[in-house]
Amino acid sequence: MKLACLLSEGFEDLEALGTIALLRRSSILCDIVSVFSEPTVKGSFSTTVVADVMLKDLNVSNYDGLFIPGGRHSFILKDNPEVLKVVKEFHSKNKYLFAICAAPSVFGVLGILDDKKYISFPTTEVYMKKGIRMREKAVRDGKIITAVGAGAVYEFAFLIIETLLGKDKRQEIEKRIQYYLN
Image (cartoon, rainbow, N blue to C red; front, side):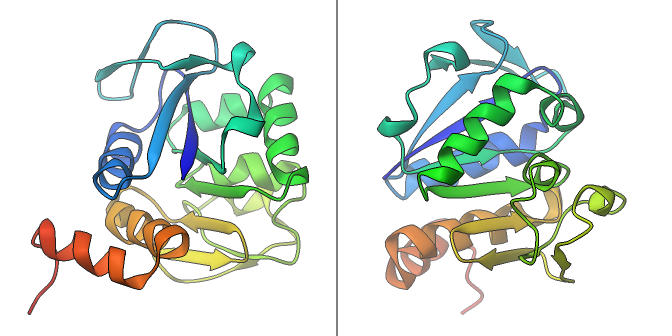
């Protein structure tokens, strides 16, 4: 399995890097995609990461899904025609779509969350007026997984892992990082 993770300046550090680390730990490849073709991208809390791919070079066919972390960059991404084009292409090819915090708004403005269960950071529901807002940390509806915010990174990543690789893999990773309570 291989995912593309869209980042631009102002991404939420924990949501991006925590999720990527857990996915990679479970053998899900996750390329960091620089939206604005900068070789490095700085998060909201000044964490700088090096991109694997530039958005202009992204080939959707090489990926099983798309991951967008939240942060203030979400409000730029939801209005960016190139980002919206890429999201539409992932969706039209029936690939997985994952977003956390404010990032579900990118799916929302495209109508992808219409009549779908989702969760997002409070106040962003204005972009998902026809979605079915849930009160959970992470929500799955078909091939779409959303989460409420940085406090739900584990639940978000574990739901992605379980969806892509099964419950046994999720439990293996939970045990390996000492997340389980038993």
